[in-house]
Length: 85
Image (cartoon, rainbow, N blue to C red):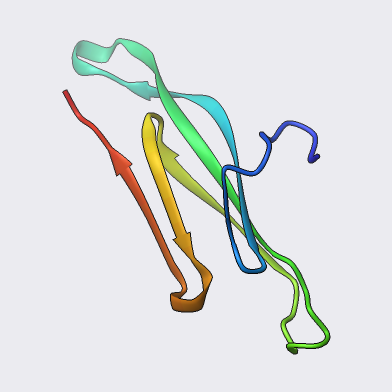
């Protein structure tokens, strides 16, 4: 487990994705400051000497509330769904 991150929420091949919720202050209408919920995704690529894959990682900042997440490492593809009401 990584400190501060969830258990893996998506795995594909040697790519694992972890999430962490955070709050970021933004300026709202009429100068009010309100926290805007955000979600960080940590994408880890696990190394493999056999397949000649190097380790790498990325942190993506998304709007909170991404309800579904799909990753396909063979296509370098990450899809997330966010419902807006």
